[in-house]
Amino acid sequence: MSMGESTSAPIHTTPDTNNVVSTFSVVDYVVFGLLLLLSLVIGLYHACRGWGRHTIGELLLADRKMGCLPVALSLLATFQSAVAILGAPAEIYRYGTQYWFLGCSYFLGLLIPAHIFIPVFYRLHLTSAYEYLELRFNKAVRILGTVTFIFQMVIYMGVALYAPSLALNAVTGFDLWLSVLALGIVCNIYTALGGLKAVIWTDVFQTLVMFLGQLVVIIVGSARVGGLRHVWNVTSQHGLISGIELDPDPFVRHTFWTLAFGGVFMMLSLYGVNQAQVQRYLSSHSEKAAVLSCYAVFPCQQVTLCMSCLIGLVMFAYYKEYTMSPQQEQAAPDQLVLYFVMDLLKDMPGLPGLFVACLFSGSLSTISSAFNSLATVTMEDLIQPWFPELTETRAIMLSRSLAFAYGLICLGMAYISSLLGSVLQAALSIFGMVGGPLLGLFCLGMFFPCANPPGAIIGLLTGLTMAFWIGIGAVVSRLNSAVTSPPINGSSSFLPSNMTIATVTTLMPSTTLSKPTGLQRLYSLSYLWYSAHNSTTVIVVGLIVSLLTGGMRGRTLNPDTIYPVLPKLLSLLPLSCQKRLRWRSHRQDVPVVSNLFPEKMNGVLQDSRDKERVAEGGLVLQPCSPTCVVQETSL
View (tube, rainbow, N blue to C red):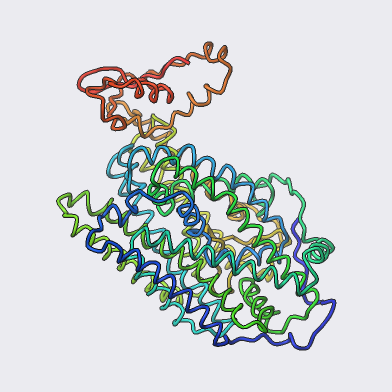
């Protein structure tokens, strides 16, 4: 069980730690400035390299020539934001290591995208993930998905820029709007000019800075309190080392089942169907490289999670030995990490600047990915379909202009965030609310051949309605609560009382000391089950509506957009069982349009390799002019 011990009763006291140094030294400013400068130089290098010979494919997808290692580090950096760097150690410090079991969800959360989503997206040669929705359903579903994604990212990116700047300003005295403008402008320049290649390579650099900054804090902090063994002993004595909590109740915020299985859906919404990540998969030079990049994220994610846990444990052990200042005792949860770093590294010029560089590397990587993915979906889904005659030069100029425009919108959203006050937590939770329904929409299309466009549209709208109902209801319930502190395993927030921010995925709703009933019970659903609940809603409603409206009868179905779940599952059975379980589709009246095999004409497979590839998926394309029909093979 997670426990959060009071840190007001230290073992030893030292008078020199009663006041936190709240200013940067010259060396710290130099280190922080170098981060911005090097990020800008890397981005401009890729922007200027081959200037005048750039293509729209190079700008949006790096010419599909990226290797698996830079793509993997970029995948990691995209959602390893400053929010997570501040929030995860604070979670461990307050409630113990139960949060570490989230790492169990990384296995399926990355294995499923690697073997299901990536092959489907890559073989369709997409640029925007939402092109898939048009190929599977129709243009209306594609536009609806694109608009939903744009809404999600625009709301989030300003908050992601403003929140860490506000926390940094409160703790270090670092000028708030100077940091906001510096990050926004630098990120805007290299993203707009350099495109995806510049974003990926700056992500690689920023990932290394993040690792280095966190590693320095762990090494110096553990050395200050007597080593990692002492840290482990102290935290164990105070119940911070959590066991496996097997409570199946989905309304308990953190249990093993919630973290390990509810977290899978959260990971799928991020690494399976989010445009920022899909765009990186599609930039790989081959499908194998895209799959390997997804595999490579797994150990990197585990290392990142372990480092966050260690920082939280070291911070706990440190403040059990040294006295907190009154300023620190009144600090909001997110500020604890920054106060700790400034306290720990104040006598080591340059190291506080390194951690701040680590913090803002998270912001840069997240925001640049948002700019680039927003520009891509706007260009591919909302402009080019209506203006197909755009020349290459105009398309490049328009794409850069879109990235720059979204950068300005980000700065505007940061300013709006400063005016929202406590309402800001509702805006932040939108990011998590929207991810689940979009995941459900893609799963509906990919795994259920009978799903049709009306089912997809109504399913998505229902899922979004349910998501906002529960999410906003949880926020309002929390704001109306008079509870001053959460229970031991209750939900917490990671940023100041006037602007609560959660991890990169969603807001963590609070619970009350008394057991909620009625709608309050629904509002206390663990945030890690949001994606699972909302995506399931989309699938169930989508299937019901599809069946009531005739399914795919009379509509074209592209077999390349379907993942053959049943044939794949049956192929795992012994051959004798497969022969007994002969299953044949009755959808012979569904016309199919296939674009996976350019060699075939009028539905006739011209190459034996095509026959093998189709048969592996359990589908046989039978000649039938002018189109072909789908028939499941007998297994």
